[in-house]
Length: 319
Ligand SMILES: Nc1ncnc2c1ncn2[C@@H]1O[C@H](COP(=O)(O)OP(=O)(O)OP(=O)(O)O)[C@@H](O)[C@H]1O
Ligand SMILES: [Mg+2]
Picture 1: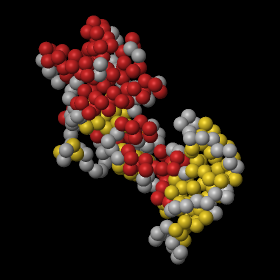
Picture 2 (picture 1 turned 90 degrees about the vertical axis):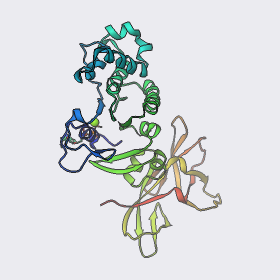
Picture 3 (picture 1 turned 180 degrees about the vertical axis):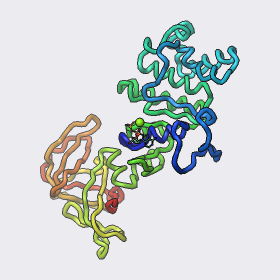
Picture 4 (picture 1 turned 120 degrees about the vertical axis):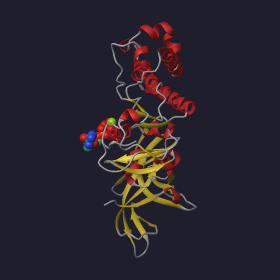
């Protein structure tokens, strides 16, 4: 995952062999495929707009790759129906529908299933999905992403699923790769990426994080931020970003005694918004605005913002 223009599609196209890479190697299971043309790489790609042939029936769309490979007709039929069954299109359209219906007569979600079946039918070693859910409405998207994950677990094909939706990435991936400006920024399990973002960019990209600017001091091993000093082992000097999640902070009254290994900021609640799963309080700390999520709306004005010390990440400023 990564923001628009960071190179996700370019990377998929390189893996599929549609783009010749200038440097580096692409290996599947240790086998170097860098010099191979697309048809010898055993990959299949599902494009963002599905790229189904509108004038062909569902059956012919899915069968296309097999016919190119000169697979015998009886086997084509068996495999096409198998792939359509896998994505539950046989239940939806019935055999007759599969023989006669064309993509423009299907819903977005159904077209997406057909595109998946067309990719799966060739039994690729690597399945490449380029934002396969971005054309679906929010509710269908939630359902189809669960189905894609179940399907992937069943067919056990290595799948690279591109998205710029952090929730989608965190909820279906075994391993998440965060990209920015053509570079891989972090690789990890969804939990690692969420709980321990390794840069301010990743933390901000995941959303619901507070990103403050602090000043590192090597001499006394601290960072100054939001009017307080935090001890922090640092070999760097100068600016740093200090990051913590809105749902890992809590509010306390300004007179409250706070115990434990925590970081405490003083501030004023400026605004409270209901965001569905929580109330989000916007607290002014010096010149910074900090978000604090809690299950109930707080009546407090002058507050302490309390964050467990281990939840506060400090990054020397990149560059
Ligand atoms: N063959 C190529 N060689 C060099 N640069 C390319 C090539 N193809 C695309 N680019 C550039 O790579 C950058 C990334 O484009 P890409 O389409 O991969 O982004 P993306 O992450 O898929 O974005 P989006 O989320 O908007 O789809 C763009 O600036 C694009 O112009
Ligand atoms: Mg793209």
